[in-house]
Image (cartoon, rainbow, N blue to C red):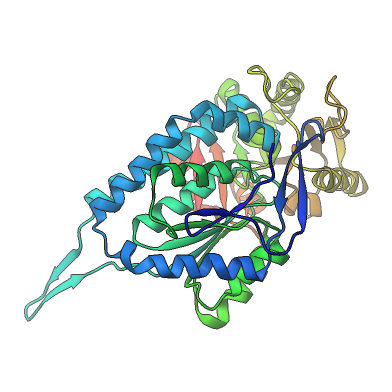
Length: 438
């Protein structure tokens, strides 16, 4: 494909520095395109364009901006299969997942927030002496920084509400997965969104991301990515008291009680652990199983994992694709080696696998490990790959204690036929989201 370009002020522009980065395909290692390594001058131009466009855009009514969101949704929907194919190739994920999750949610995000805007009314609070009105106003210019695992899905989740409420934005997609961000800019250009409302700069974190977050004319920052990078983003945004939204890592526990429906639980926990090759912050990478059914669950779980189909991401029957990069594969393999040092026993996987015809890609067999202490690094640190650890527990209180034995608090799941117990355990887990039997 051609070299990608930044999208600034309604134009696709060549970046200023002249440096480029190759974008390889995760499944094969072959070249897809080059992306510009933008620098602070490119960021300045994008922020200036966003700042200049904000007053007129913010002056539109909610219904007018909702109409724009629907136009973008219509144009994305017309490219549904193109989105799925691009996302699968750029990330290495199975095309069936790219279609049902990435393409679908990218369209539905714009439609959802268009609906919210049309229903939105200012709140009114009556008191004995006054009528109080709440008026929502745009914050200003937003910096939207998105990760490589769900590129267009999460970009649309940020762009739609931000511009819907009258803000203008500068997007910085992951340098590892730039393709669908470029497609969104082409869609935005195609529908005729006013210039400067949505801008995009390609590049890495140091060259483009850091100056964007620190820019004096950026009023809000929305970042999704790794926890260590999130710490740097927060530190950069704090001195100016910028509005800040961070979605970071997770080390989520799936808690399996003896009274669960074993068939649906095994299937659900396999999906929770290995969706997108385990490269989702919501993945259930720790599975806690009640003692009395531990052996049965373990054996059935391993059988189900070994039955997963690994291979060509463009094949509709593929369950697991490639990891995002060679560096990330090495990181995940490093954790598997660490697990062995920490006393873990490999039940399956743990090694690279190279499907025929894809020997140049970043492939790893889905891995299940038991025997680790709940306090071990592999049990408490986010691995972000196709690695799941199994841990037995003897009581409800012990399960909750193990689940809470991590710095993270993102998500979890509980599997039981006793919904009172499901609710009780859900409330005891220190996470933002808990699913019961799903």
